[in-house]
Length: 298
Picture 1 (cartoon, rainbow, N blue to C red):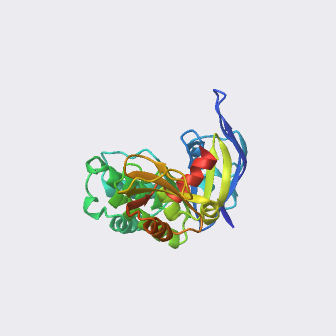
Picture 2 (spheres, rainbow, N blue to C red):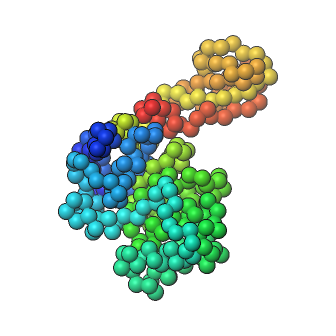
Picture 3 (spheres, rainbow, N blue to C red):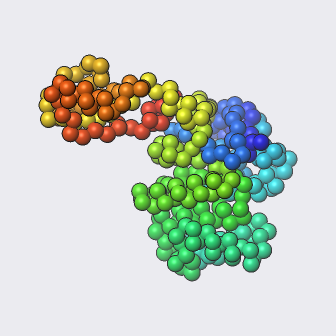
């Protein structure tokens, strides 16, 4: 069964701008799908339509098999959303934000408090439960947004740039929590500009460009299409550009090398060593999904 089914969805604004053009794809129940695209690709418009903030101008959307046009309130009760912008009252207490949100979905107050306590513990906000939201750091506010989206225990979670403004340590902790709720059966649709995040978390990738879906495939299938991966390496010796690694000089000691699919980094290092060249440092130029994304969606 599909958690979300979009069929020929379109959106044209009153200005004449066509933000979505014949968008069709499925999000399978229990999956984690990444929705990727450059600014202006249509991702936020699509999230807006799913959450009722934007009205589509064509096509059909089913949420858990329910037509969004016929039963919008029921369909959206299956969805929890974490938008890009903070949209809670900064003067409310953290626990009250969660409990009040649960009330909008008819969750009894006693149940809401129990759920809020659990989420605050899970997301590292327990010590801030009686603090007003304005006193939280940016990362804590982001985690509060996730807790609020989950308070009514939705089957589907929409994460719109969940790691924006979050430092590396908090981001990794957030990934672990996202993995945990996904393992419990929650379907997740994730938009992100951190392609490392999509590669780390997602099973399926949908890429958009200028309002259209340009790629829709399992992430492993996309990665397998790479004919080569780029690396940046540092040596103490002067090298010659070109060759089997398509070397390009960046500065006196730094080079960019292209490693063909199926060739290991170890074998490249050994190959250089056999020619008297020692590689002092090596790192990927970009994560693998980024190279696919640049080719398909930029």
